[in-house]
Length: 303
Image 1 (cartoon, rainbow, N blue to C red):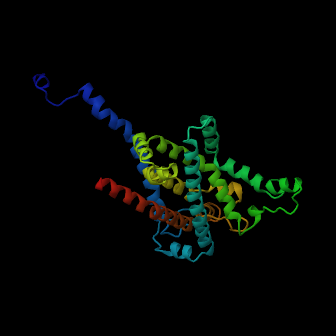
Image 2 (cartoon, rainbow, N blue to C red):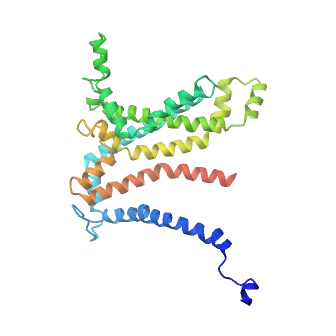
Image 3 (cartoon, rainbow, N blue to C red):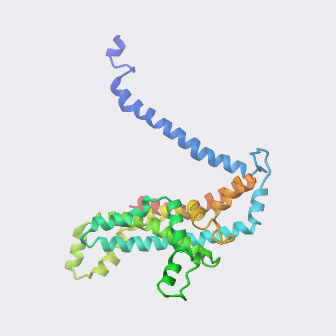
């Protein structure tokens, strides 16, 4: 009793609310992240060094799965498709999103309605987007048939069934889905730029294109980085979009590493090979994202 009165450590409702309660609240989330994210990454990494097939095996087998993966022509075809799709998807989405944001930033009428229209595709799942574009690009149902009905009998737009162009139909659907979201990011960045800098440039006689090229767009560097990372993440995990749109075909023309991983892990009974491909997807994503993160952290340290 005497010790409590003198301020000795003990239970205090205020200390519980300020110190202990926040830790109790976030502890389940931290545990779930450690187990559900890093734990399963570690489990997948271990399976990639085993000869697991239908069921997991835990006997060490060395690099046999990685050797089989690198000797697999379909894996390299899927990586090539990912490179084409990823580069076009990211840079076209950034360009379209930036252009739409600049146009909306001109204080035009019906801005709210246009912003909603641009953002609407993001509310749809990739399954719905892929199914809708599958109908639109189908030569017997979509754009090609519509052109023929209008009298343009020589019009051909059969990219979705052409192995040389099918991957570009995935780019079209992906850009349609994501450019509105990128537009929203850029528009928020544009609205956050200090107006006094722009007014000072206008007083100095700078034209509007010069202001955008030399002041506004460079000020959007953090938005570019955020949008790039989000789009890169979407490109790597674009499984449902491709399955709904092309199913990976024709042949393996639109096959991506995510489809390769799924089919070998869960339909072909090659769990170890699928785990090895999953780890290579993780390394690829890290190789793309880590230099940008390092560059930004280094810039922040320099001030």
